[in-house]
Each structure stands twice: as structure tokens, then as C-alpha cells.
Amino acid sequence: MAVEILMPALSPTMEEGTLAKWLVKEGDAVKSGQILAEIETDKATMEFEAVDEGIIGKLLVAEGTAGVKVNAPIAIMVEEGEAADAAPAPAKAAPVAAAAPVTAAAAPSAARAALVAASGARVFASPLARRIAADKGLDLTKVQGSGPHGRIVKADVEGAKPVAAKAAPAAAAPAPVAAAPATASMPTGMAAETVMKMYADRAYEEVALDGMRRTIAARLTEAKQTIPHFYLRRDVRLDNLMAFREQLNKQLEGRGVKLSVNDFIIKASALALQAVPNANAVWAGDRILRIKPSDVAVAVAIDGGLFTPVLKDAHLKSLSSLSAEMKDLAGRAKTKKLAPHEYQGGSFAISNLGMMGIDNFDAVINPPHGSILAVGAGVKKPVVMKDGSIGVATVMSMTLSVDHRVIDGALGAAFLQAIVDNLENPMAMLA
Image (cartoon, rainbow, N blue to C red; front, side):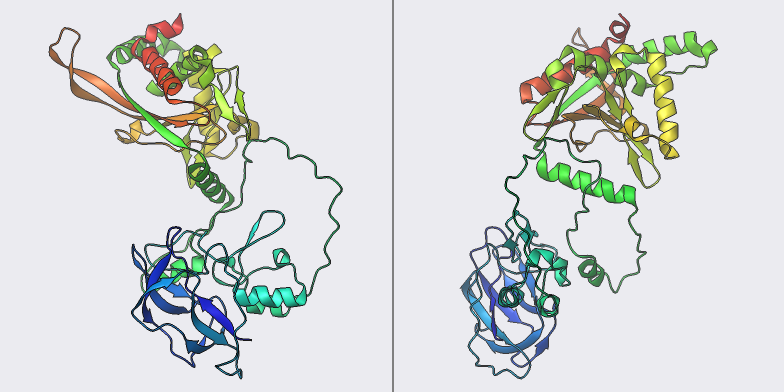
């Protein structure tokens, strides 16, 4: 069965391109995933993969041809023994063309041929596979693809048997409003085989993903793709806090308590959530939940990943109590002995890389939280004092990453100001 190969859309905005070079000739047998041509877009030269196996019957567009429209036929693929001039089956133009670039400027996964199932899920399949499936009455949502990036190709549908469609329920139950699940399907990006081919001539060690790494990848990919982050930055003068901490630690030495700067940051944030209650909120699908207590999550690095144990009711606890609880949670996190209720929940998180010498950074929000505070190192810097003179102060940089669906700019600024005020006036936190 002859099938048209169409000009692919290698970027969301591509409307036409230049067929720079054919990497096959008429009569060549090709396999799924084989590079057929180099195509120039307005941004880069990219490679175009075959999505099915077959024989190149005819090249319709010559090398160097510019202005070839997306979804225009550029070649005809036939089956073995089929005449090269056989009438091609009309290839239905998908929302985006079937393309699999493997160069640095890789097109997004959306730029691939796809069907849309009744459920709304995207089904990636080649034109030939779609035609065979239609002839056999196959439901492509039930077929596992073996082509590049999981695309359904000819071989997948040739041996498949039709599955009787289930009767639709009389009425679909409304989907419950829920926060993002603790685990999510693993985002793939470029296929492993494609990436491994790129580094075939280089020495490397392949590291299998464990459950934690897989979950981190899924959740943070979801966070950056779905959460409209914006960032607020402030410097904090720590001299008063450092002096107050030294004084308290001397008084607490007999009890074996030693407060860290991070303990003060936790307390300052918990009180700020009470002072600016509208910032103590999470995103819940189609609504916002405003949380009453201050449940503060703190990122803890462990071997191969991280945990974010939650200090519940942190606004009600003393600095020494927060310090002891944080040490216990961090210790058990590093040995993976935390119970789920100890690292799930909270509305806000703290990620502190200051102890590792990082001056400042931007943290990714952990859904469904409304914000996360990235804390850098406290370093001595020249500053302008209140009397206008130049002096030296210990300054710490903080960046608040905010979910704009939950917290607007002015509200985020007020929340960050409350944290700064607490840290620069630490004695007030004990009042």
C-alpha cells in the first residue's frame, strides 16, 4: 500500500521549510527511525525520521527546494513488490506533522503526528498505521507503539486484533477536585534509544531510575510545565539575627540545643504565613485552598534525591522545638524512614543551599504549594548604613518562587516583606 510522506512541522510555528538534503534514494528500503532527510526551518537544520518501514518509491521534492509547505507530500513509500507508481493512499494531515528531529534543536513532542481519542488522550501513529487500523476496525488507544517515542507503526497494527468497544456509561461522574498525586507517570522527552545513539561513540555509564528519581522527574516536569512561576528577590541583613542566635545558643548550651540560621528562617516564614494569611494557600485544580495553620516544608537532600518533610503548626512551636523536630525529620529522611504523612502537605517550602556556598538561586515550586523560598549564603558585603555611611553587614539573598494562580505580585511581595522583617528583628519572633 503506497503512502505519502509529508513535510513535517519541526516547530510549533513552522509553516514551510527547505528540503536541504535527501539521505535516501528511490528504491532504498528504510526502517522505522531511519533518517530520511535534512530539513531547514527558520531556526535550524533538523533531521527527519521515518515512522514506518517500507521502500522509497518516489521522491517528489528535489534537494534544495525551498518553501515546501507543511503537510505537502515530499515522497511516496511503497511495500515490497509494489510498483513505485502505485496510487498513494491519501495521508490525512494530523494537527502537527510526523517528525522526529534528533539534533540539538529538538522539536517538542507535540510536533508529531497524533490522533485524539474520544477521551481526549493523544494517540501517536503513522499515517500507514492509522489507515491499516481503520481498515481492520482497531482502536489505536489499545495498541502499544514500538516506533520512535512510542509511536504506533505498521508492525504494531498488522498483527493486532480488533477489540470490541465498551458501551459508554449513561452519565459520567464528575471528576473530583484533587491536588497533584504523589506519583506521576514518567515524562519521556527524547526517547532513550535516540539519546543513546547520540552518545554511541562516547564512554558513559547508564543509571537506571529508581522510584524516587522517577517521581521527582515527573513532579518537577509537571511543575515547570503547568505552574506559572514568577520570582521575587530580597536581601536580608543578618547581623541582628547572628548576634541574637549566638546569645540564645549560649543560654541553651546546657540543654544541648544549638539553633541554626535555618531554624530562624522556618520560624520567620511560619509567622509570615499568619501575618499574610492569603499567601498561606495551595492550588487545587479549579480552586484555591487557604490553609489556616502554618505547615512549612523544608527540602532535605538525600542520596539520589530529596525529601520535603513538613513541620506542622510551625507558628505555634518554639525555636528549640522546631530545631529538634527538624533534626529528627532530616535524620530519618536521609535513611528513608519517614512516613508519608511526614513529607506530604504544607502550603509553602524552604530550600536552603546557603550552607553549600550558593549565593542565590531560583527554586521550583512543589505542587500543590503556592510558593517556595530559595535561601542563599549569608556573606559580608559593603552596605549603606542608616546614617548614610558605608559599613559592612552580613547579607543573605532570598528568592520567593510564586505560583501566579494562587498569589499575585503584591501579595507575594507582602509575604516576602514579612519574612524579611522577622529575620531582621528576630527578638520580635519570641513575643
